[in-house]
Image 1: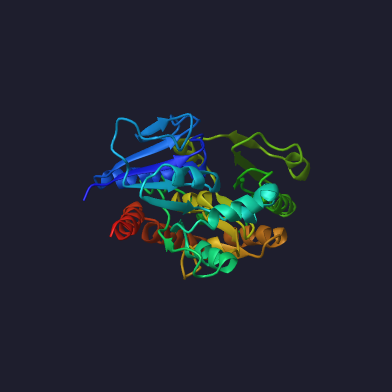
Image 2: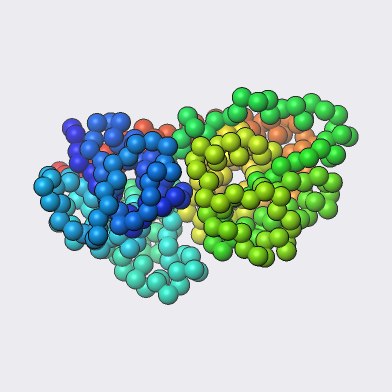
Length: 353
């Protein structure tokens, strides 16, 4: 049965959280539904596929000259009240991270909790997030549905250029080679743990002579970053297609996110692209799969452990190849867009009954 679904977003400016919504909309559209993204700002031209974006002055303004949607989906705590004000009979709340866990939003923590206490179904991108909401609000405050996460495995897949050649050289030669380490995320967003990742690269440079650091973020680098360790290449606001190219150029990713991380999309995209990852033992990263052989894990803030983990992967070809293969298999098994669309459809169908 065809449905009309409308997502509400404050802005569609380039970002991982926006791309998640666009990917959901695209998957639902492929299933024959009419899906619109209503927003007050931003530019959606960065997204490599067609999506229906409507720019409005106010998210809660009436749906004029069109049929009322069957469901409206709030995508951030600020869009919950506008979603409820639209008069659409089914309102859902997509949660990609619990915003009250972010120190940067401390002055809004009360308002965030009030938004979550609106007794509308929550859609979470992972079971760890559902468990976090149940811990904070109790198991009966609102329905919680784990819908999973989309990863564009057509775009993010291993590159055609052979990745293996460095590991076929004698082990004694490998430390002399240039190794490209990728660190993604804004330094100022505490849950991304970028400072810890940069310290890991600094320590790695004390052990290897040629470590090349590639930084990707949505905003210009913080002045403190080069004080921790030199950045060789930096990229700001990279498009999804260009991200795929950068993942292919990297030998490893280090992502030392903290427990407040709602998902960590770049880590999954990197692994889908064939780039081995060193990750922290946080609920989201550990929640990607019950078998944890898809990455090397270290404790939060353990920069030294992350640096040594890179050395171990360089030294142990079999370990590195196994991890890469396990990651590719895990992403394709667990992050299917059709599965996410199916879960969303099921929740809406249940709400209509």
